[in-house]
Structure formats: structure tokens, C-alpha cells
Image 1 (cartoon, rainbow, N blue to C red):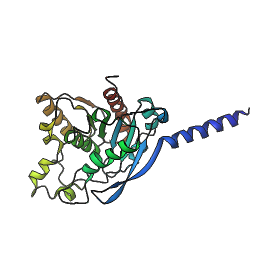
Image 2 (image 1 turned 90 degrees about the vertical axis):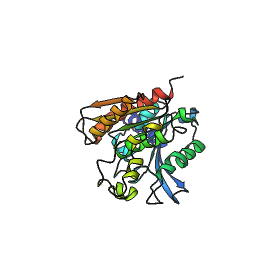
Image 3 (image 1 turned 135 degrees about the vertical axis):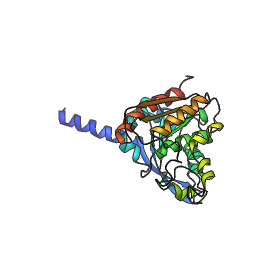
Image 4 (image 1 turned 180 degrees about the vertical axis):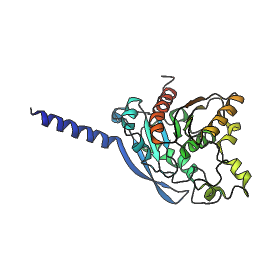
Length: 269
């Protein structure tokens, strides 16, 4: 058989496999009266599997549902290697709150209820908290911990990479005041919507991973979060290594987090 023909068939096969693994779907959000786009990444052998765990992977400010597959193009291979479904929703610039200011911004409800409900209904998932984890980068790192801590009945593990884990030092950045109002006039509201003020809610069985580059502008707030968790004797993995707030750092950091969540999902198997 012609060698070029074999190579071509192999290439087509690999493209077909990838297209089956990665899909973009729209899911209705009754709470926001709109449809939200989401990238769904399945293991290559999904059809032969059942009861797969799901990692919800959140993008940062200015990103969208496609951000993670662009930052880490081999996510489909990692989903196969670690035997999990990966779901990347479009969170706009919402910071994954239910905004007390804008009733059309209810991304906390969307991700924790509407999206997880849809995925469990339409895919072969493990339908309890031990089969769900959530993490993300930057704004999505805030979202991963915010949603994971506040919805421990839904998520058994959560994480953050380069996360904005305390929003209060940045009152004029990234459209946050569009969702919370002006900081000076709404300090209590800002306190109530920042991750570092949610730690009293954490139960002992919540599994957490946090990382941030040492040259990242969010490094100090991550260090503060790590110290506060340690002082409260709350178990968590914390990684601080050289790096800045960019795609190169996240391309590397997500591999550590995927392994971490894989170990969480299959620790009893």
C-alpha cells in the first residue's frame, strides 16, 4: 500500500477522532433567559465508558468557552489519559457570580445548577460530588473556588490557577463593579463576593488545589489565601513557582491540576 495513502488515512482518522471528542453546544439558561455556549471534551473511548467524572474548566476575563482548548490544544488527549469529561462554559466577564446588580448575570446559578444538570442528563457521568470538580484561570480561578466552596453538595473538589482570589485590591479592574457596584459605596457586598471571605464555609472533605506564579500580579492575594487556609488548618495543595499571568504558565499549570483531579476522582478505585 502506498505510504502516502497510509499517512493520509491516519491523518483523517485522527481528525475524525478529534472532532468526535470536542464539540461546542448551546445550553439554555432559564435563570438568564438565554443560551450559553460550552465546549465539551470527551475521552476518545467515551462510547465504551460509563459513569465518567467531569471537570468544569473556567476561562479568564476577556476569554470564552474556546479559551482553554486554545491555551492547551492537547486537552482531548489528557481527557483520554485521565479518563474524564472536560466542560468549558462561556462565562462572559461575569466572575461567575449571580450579580446583585444585573439580573441577567447569573453565572453561579448557570454553572452550578443548569450546566451540571444538563451534563448529567445528557452524558455518561458520575452523578454526585465525588465525580465533579471545578477550576479555572484568573477570573476563572476565582470562579473555581467561589463555586466549589459555595456548592460543596455539587463539587467535591475545586481549584484555581493564577486566580483573583481576593478582588478587593482591584476595585476598578475587569468590569467587576458592573456586577457589584462601586467598591467604596458597596464594601460589604464586595466582602461577600470575594473568595477569601468564604473560607468559613469549607467542610473538611472539600479537596482543593491553588497555584500562582511568583511574578503574577495575583501572587500576593494567593499567598494571603494560602496563609489564611493554613491558619485555619484547612487542607489544600498550594504551588508557587516562577511564572507570570499568561498562557505559557497556564499551559503548564493545568497539567498538574488535571493529575490532581484525576487522583481525586479515582482515589477509591
